[in-house]
Image (cartoon, rainbow, N blue to C red; front, top):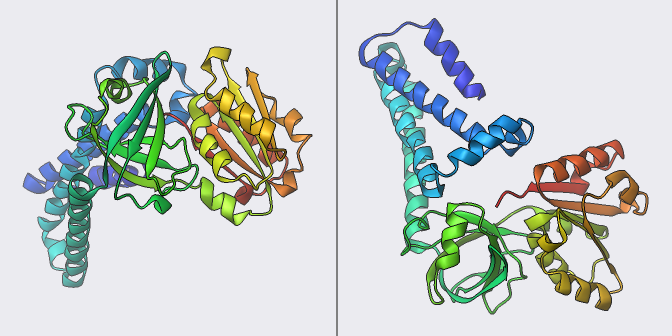
Length: 343
């Protein structure tokens, strides 16, 4: 946004003509359009605050499906190329030889890095097969993917991965999902996916044996767990945000943990039998499952906040609530992390 603001000042205060003006106008319009699009579809903090925007987003999601959104964002490439051409056309800029050398080298390095990444994503990502699919509840499926040549140590408990299904229309672009299980040397990845969007609905129809490519893992939960190795882990989650917490609970039986799991309705609960089993067999694990919100200030009275690390995943309102109270309680910033859960 700041860069587009500077571009607007440049556009309105410096006159130009011909191709210089045309390329500048086109790249500015593309960047501005993508900014507006991104604020509507990707800025959860904004749509969570402004209800009309959230309603507009729900309507437009039927048109701007996942793959179309990815291709729209690739307009950034065209805009960047226009910026490159725009600079090359400005005579007084091209006379600054040192600057132009640096500009051209940086542009070339960026283009090469981008092409290498895209070739890797489409040709060399680890590929596995769907070995199990079961319906957890209406519109909610669990998928098990076995990836023979996966470096399982790259996927830590609490991570999310990107997957693509190259032979299925509408599922060929990478999409993020959190991992349910602790991935071990059997190289089986478990995902729990609710059919909220076009990608997540289409994936419900794939068959056992379908080829799936995997990129990841990514995430910061494991970093905080490692950095605060002596702390009790307080896991705070709502709705489908329970998914990464299951992997964390499974992977760290040695850690003292407290789980706060809130749902809108009792039939929204996931993996409750597994959570109850862990709670009954692990004396260092306390599980709280509740319909409706927890009150953070009340729950923190039962916890030694200075000896705890807080991991939060779930809807924006849940994360905002807990983070606000943690700040009020003067919990250090390196002792909590919120991952907004929109997939």
